[in-house]
Image (tube, rainbow, N blue to C red):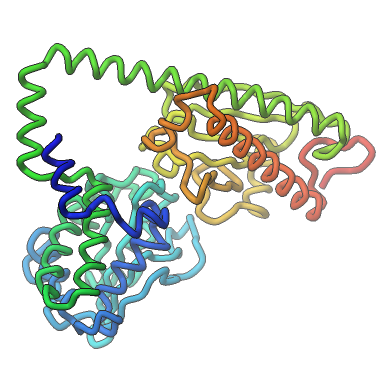
Length: 412
């Protein structure tokens, strides 16, 4: 471990412009933009097809049939390519993170780029249905570790047959290393690539072989101690998450009561808060429901940071319709890219970073419940939650649809 730290310090790898600018988790603002720019033969790197050809060779060797992509194919590279409105019935439409097209043959490549975001409904299926005649389209699902998409995204499609898995950990790192060798005598481009490669290694916890060997030996020689630490680790995470959730519930309840007294949220409305799961659960949801059996309820997830929950464990606040008005509300108001069953949502951010209680950055922040930073973080999330609730209520009111029954008017 000391060796790994020493190497980082000697190479100056502690200084990383992407980390300093807090862009490391920004799928669209950093990763898709950076990768697309490298792949574009007309990119500002002025290396023509060099980086693109390395990428196509990588796809040919380990992701489908050998030679499936010709060396001189794909002359158009786009980001956030729109393929039509989302239609969950026909399983079509959406925006493709990184899109490649060969204007000569009509063949296309669709890359869905996932860092921490969760899967959308029928997302992989929708992309596979684009330009799907005679195998003209290839879909690649890119994640940090090469994981499979959720069933709600791919349905009955199978990876390795209908679409293919890519990982930052193996594929992107290997590709960046190949690109880096090509620009050893171009300092600005070389250092930009190197900075991004260091960031990807950090995100994927990729370390040197020597460091891996040191850790492996340390574990083998201290198995009982490692097991004890692992158990204590899980217990500690549950404890600090539980404390944080309890404090959040208490503060949000106080804020809602104050809003009720002032008549600022909904005049005369009272809200009930309840937990569906504790922080051991996958979703660890918190629900906020207005009294009077309303057609909508607010929810917050996830207080567990579980990477298999919505948006990879990133926290969000949203609205779920109650059964009696479900179909009408979905037809009129459902926001694009919502998790299944949700009507609208907004991701929680703090200091320009997605809030995730599985992220070491936030675990450290909520560890000290008496710290001023902890109280500021807590108050910020409560304020964001109230702001979102107010925004949704105003939207519903504009559309003549009220969150709670209004006995003086006919609800439509």
